[in-house]
Image (tube, rainbow, N blue to C red; front, side, top):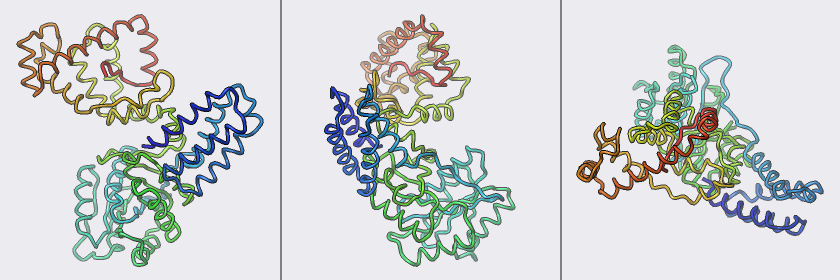
Length: 451
């Protein structure tokens, strides 16, 4: 996500830092390069023009040019303007004064509406709400069937409708009535889509809006379609009045033009981003965190949020004690890897780390997810006794473990060597254990030795 733009901006700022003194001339050069980088990232040209004007006005001020570290000042200005472009603050879902809150989920066909509806129901359930799903797509039975399957996967009730209910409005009204009777506080309405915007679709959506009085109308856009997604969002807003955007497939969009343009063009906030195919791959959109991530400052806050959501606190603290002690076994090593894998792909986690100082080369680290799976398979093929005491693993045991895990003896040897190095590293931390332990405990981040 934003890989291309992030790399280019970091190179521009590195060149600025290399200048002995910041002048209007080299600042103009940097702004020209930033403009090109944004356009190549598929950011809307009007948004780029406004952005450059804002940065230029602030960056060429006397206060910046005479500062002790003018390049850092410029980075701060760019970060502030990026945040403003993305929406300044996190925009949360609004709820009706009297439940159930109705959320219309709209968009073009193939944008990911149905999957996003299920993801959003799971997200809201984790937040403490009690959502109910309903599909009013009467044109594609497969869409209603898909939502029914997804609803079961995320343990959310769905209103299936009766044979007599053949119109979108009938289905939506009945779903709202059932939600009210069942004490559900949110109704997520997955609407029909088209390959292109047409009057029939808009008429249908307008009728749903008028009858249901939804608190939110969320437009679902595919980030991979770039400015087409922005254009569609603008048209939907003009004709329907959307209140926010869910941008799907953000994990596959290296440029990020849609995310950077959509707020400025529509005037409506990006509320959620889809970052994978699984039903838990939906995140609230935080403009300030994303701006920091684009500039290589990382997104540690989101990483901490993810850890707190996923990792059991008591388990993490016990593991921390073992990491800094002498009884860190191969079993603990495997369990630690499994805990980290719950957070998502390792590549995605590395993207959240700051790409500066000692961590500046993290972005170039290539993560082989299958290698992590092999490590777990090898340890799982050991006996409990071998996991607790790796010293007893001789040649014949290594051959048996390799055969049982579908790997080679060399793979087993590499793992044991890696594990031994991790133990040695942890022992070298023993003098700093108190300080390190307190810091990690505050962050609630488990360690990840060996990788």
